[in-house]
Length: 445
Image 1: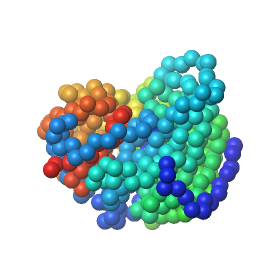
Image 2: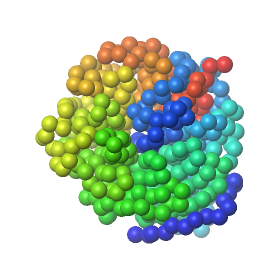
Image 3: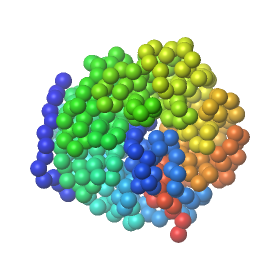
């Protein structure tokens, strides 16, 4: 496995993604809470505590700006102050590139043999104009990807000073917010199940960046110094290919790194990488990111089975079947979308379908089970919440806005012309949506 880390002097102002899962854990400062520094928002729950986006929108209503974006991708944009960041893998036409002769397998598309230009883009929040872009690598990928996403499938993350752009097998890069490349590291090449591609984003807390590397080869969880890219610790794991993103959550004065997995959900010590606890019970192809709250973490998966577990933090060792498992449920759980925890209620899609379930977070009360959401067809995006509203985004451009309550109360159904697999980002009075072809800023005049 390649082990390359180097500092970069200077940098470039020259010149994406399935995310089902991008998670950043940051101290909940006021600045963090007023931005969207990760795909699950400032609290890692899907909630923006200070945001108040419009209730309704369409191509002719409450679109402040709409810009075409390069390449393909489906992860959430992140927002810090006046900049909106996305990642992209842009195919580069190359006459001499060797073309793959392999055929697709199931939901997979094979590599086309074209070089991909891996690119970081920063947009002006007010106008949608590109402030800076940088392409740290152009490379022919070593394997293909699932037909519903592309090669750059992780969300960038920021603490307001550092920007981490993770392209998985194609490198991890540390920037400042002006676009200067400070460091880069190469962790090797993933070999994913059926060449379905990669989807885990980094987590960040203090000076530590945490990256999950679960694939068909040797697995590990690794911590890097956000300032230099230097490796701080590495913990071996035993999992099949996974697409979940680590959650960093504080409990009892210790920072836990919680990682969803098909074999085991595991908790690690952030400072050292020491395994603290584990719990069995999830399904294969674990994708959703754990959600913190109520002194617990809520972990879900939904392929070839269904699993929702509320696991109390603070335990040690194997927690399977113990009192640390506060409650569980085995129907109607999400495959790709992660849950939303808002006002003590847990919101989940069923599979990748426009069906919603609502649970009480503390006791697991089943308020709503797989209720159909009119106006949506297919869902990859994770639900988000702000200003007394929950926003649910469909793959076909439809969106439902509901009231956060134990029952289903639809406030609005909206539609745009693009298709959406990325989760919304909510900041101030705006919502940013990364579609298949465009990046939207939704805001009232």
